[in-house]
Image (cartoon, rainbow, N blue to C red; front, side, top):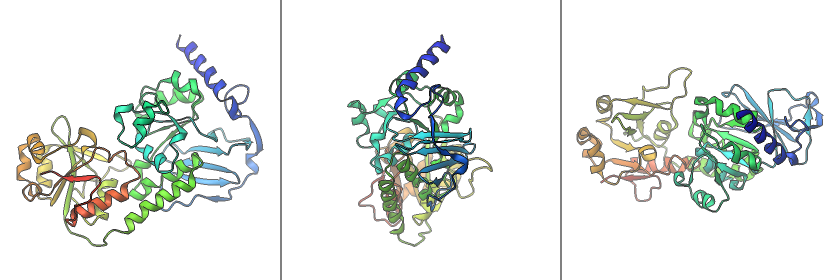
Length: 381
């Protein structure tokens, strides 16, 4: 039964993709362009910060490489241009226009919004209640977007019924490789977003250029990135010497903190602060951005921090300082609590991936005691 179901889905996908130059077997676009071996690299996308993807141009074609995803390669073919003959077997062909993207990497949605490319997305991996970004929930309610299941349980029938051009996953897909394999078996290309593995906040945001390229909105993407880059350049170039702890408490009462190699820790440093856990680096060969430590160990390090910031993206926002104290009475002994330097992030911070320039300015304002107009931080009183 499963084999029959998969066959029907594959047939549905083949019919939906017929206009994109699929060959008779449905295994991929029919090669009608020049020989790949005869094409030479004519340039590369300028990336000043991002290290987790590259784009090399071969005339009209763009070859995208994501090194951490086992050197995954994608050839972006412009609309009306033939697919090269003799492509290497490991190169996945993406034919523009890409109008039916399945975006599972929800933190990348803000990049599509910033590049004015929301219309390229048809399916998402969060339902209506999971979105904080403006317009996304409305688009779901209006039927312009469709919830197609989370990374581990895609709605294959729905995805195939409309012809999915591309699935963009986050690195959680590595925990369920079978879902990726099934999408690929159905002829749906899968790209894994590694922006969270970038070593700098600007590198993380520079992925907007990749999504702008895919959706033919590169100019808008470059403008959106330039605006955020300018926000970083406008920061006061002074070190405040003040320490900052950034955390949340999980359901077991343990503290989940960012590793010092994570982008949040680097944002704190860029804003003029000192991260409270400088020795908590990611292990060699690992890109894990967080660490879970028991409350007593967290207390020993963070109790003398000048500022503490509660990350509401996972467990929800707090309204008052009493909400924090109710979680653990040890907080009453924290220097930041006693001095009134306790802040909480807004719930939409995680999804606002193209607003890190605004967030770093918030951090700088907090450290400078100029907190009248912050966007993603608010004090707990």
